[in-house]
Length: 135
Image 1 (tube, rainbow, N blue to C red):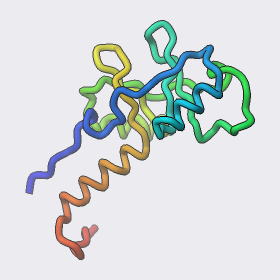
Image 2 (image 1 turned 90 degrees about the vertical axis):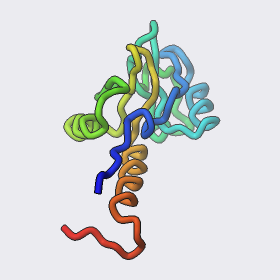
Image 3 (image 1 turned 90 degrees about the horizontal axis):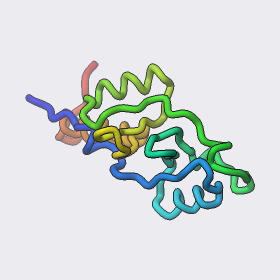
């Protein structure tokens, strides 16, 4: 049986919103809440310079995005095989990766996206209820 491996473009959160380093944390939190995201790319002069993680921002935290964003551990092209990206994320202990298309922000791939893609793959491997994978 040939199993369909999910492509990065289908598994990532596409065309996410972004913020700038000089934006306020209140603005970043509002954008995250409005769209249900947990990771917000930080872009300066057309390049991704970091990520803001909404779960790590207490409601009382103040300041600019630049003060609270962290560097991106994984940046990949949208054509990167999903298995290769997952290996990079594991090696970097990263919970998110920035995805570029022709050098421009195309999406974010998170641990949640990885779990979702893995669930799809497991369903394809064992489509019948009660069929357990034997190790």
